[in-house]
Length: 139
Image (cartoon, rainbow, N blue to C red; front, top):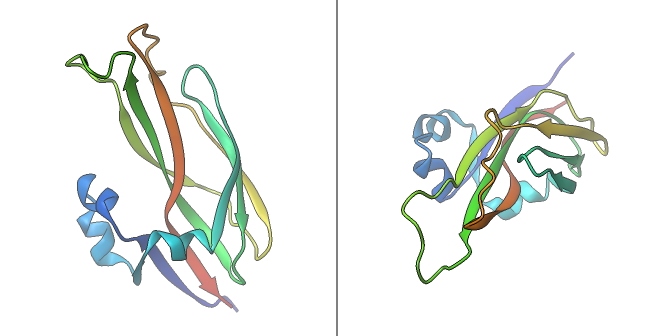
């Protein structure tokens, strides 16, 4: 028999800035980022030239996890930060990892932006991946 699922999202600016206040309202628990990072760890992240991101999620909780929601940020860093341009290509997306992760287990993830990130000479992308939400099952 399957246990009850709790939908958990991280508290903070990211939820409101991306217009997901309905997501936070529907959650069983809204927790600080630090608490969420104690349940699942993002590691071995590799970023390609086109913005493709891959890595591994490690479940450090004692419960099954599903629908781990990742926030992938492509922050644009201008070559000349004192004279930035007006058309920053920086962006952020939410990506849901489809695999269930058993307690103590791992799951690989891979995301490729479509269209790919633009190649430009006036700056570079700094990419970050963090956990923004998940379903936690207590069996």
